[in-house]
Image (tube, rainbow, N blue to C red; front, side, top):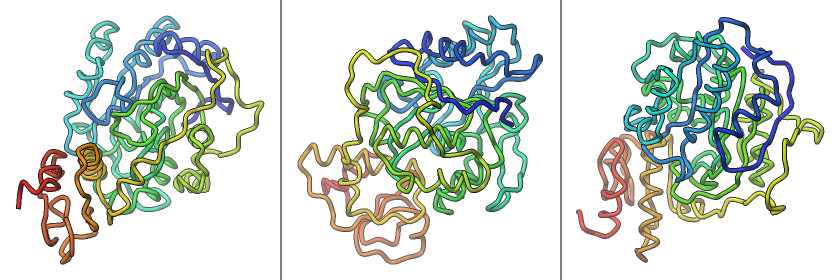
Length: 365
């Protein structure tokens, strides 16, 4: 439930995630919007075990700044909730990002939503299983990284909620094509607050590896509006990220942004425009025929293609990936066990990038 009716976006420039987070929350007077005694759940982006400096995961300072602000305002029931993507261990990821130290320093519990009980909730699309800790939090704070995505062009506030569903549901999201399920989830799981880490997101690829220093953070209360603003910054049209307008249609928020809606707390050190995605990922996957591919599988392929290009390897004319290819005879390279009907196939669920690269090198038959 969205407790704050204000739809302004607060923006701050810098590199100190902890201090910037506190400044944003102070400026927006967030403590005044949270009912006393509320259970507060912080939902960062812990897609995989990678340092935030690589551009894929939420900086620990965003969490520590938020927790410190809340505790100073007298809130005690605070937890961190998240699950990494399919095929990755959440605990491994939280330690790689330094969240274990944050939990220890502030006496806050971390809950792996892969192990949480779920509740089936009716959505505009179909019933969905959602983690109870996310559903039952009195005040849910969404803490995404603004970055590129190899399947949906961009990921921010709306897609970050995907970490609140079990792995079985994540696989179904991909079977359903991602767009509709992301919008449907947003219609029933509405964060009260969004704090966006846009300090160094990878603007092409959700797994990171090519971070771009954008040196800013944003705070808002409408995930649809936040994502629409993220599109503006990245030079994308709303049509490039179809789940945003669909989420608006299904009541998750509003895409409208007026200049007066942006409240800047300071000015950037450089007047340079927001960097734009390079388009490298789209170029690398031009020969990929994806049909309901899971994120971890697709990301492993992209990682392998990055390396293959660096090594000057030839890319096959046809690469198949995704659950939609199960049981099909495929003329080309198959990636993942769903594509075992391909002429050649790198098995695994998901396969590793190194295994895919070995196949591209011709080291395995």
